[in-house]
Amino acid sequence: MNQPQTTQDILDTAIQLELYKKLVIQLNKDFLYANIDLDFDEDILPSSLKLMLHETIFRLIQEKFMDYLNLLYIVDVPEEKVKQLDGSDVLVLSEQVTFLLLQREWQKVWFKQKYS
Image 1 (cartoon, rainbow, N blue to C red):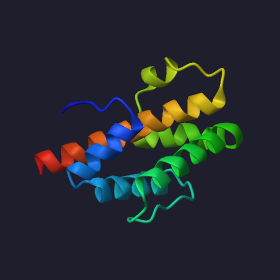
Image 2 (cartoon, rainbow, N blue to C red):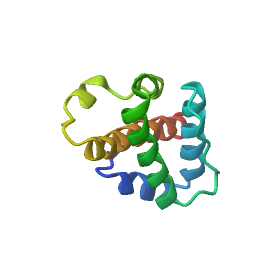
Image 3 (cartoon, rainbow, N blue to C red):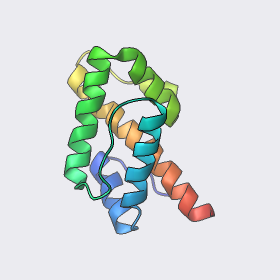
């Protein structure tokens, strides 16, 4: 599996492989497990998904840090990758975390599709 290098790469690849809806479903499932009130419509535009996800991560970092950490745990974002990020600018940090989160969710969807 080629690792997408940007959030847009992940979304484009998911659409190309007809796995975009499964990606949205996986996101919804993990947000529900993390007890975060966010439910994406399965027909959400990729640009809207990206924006809403980024805004949510930003808000969680700013206002509900424990919920943010719980979400990263539920999604299984590698801790070492998060620790490597520069946290001096929360807006940039939330964008980078959004990518890591989407990357991990994409891996889950891709592996399920490939090996089931």
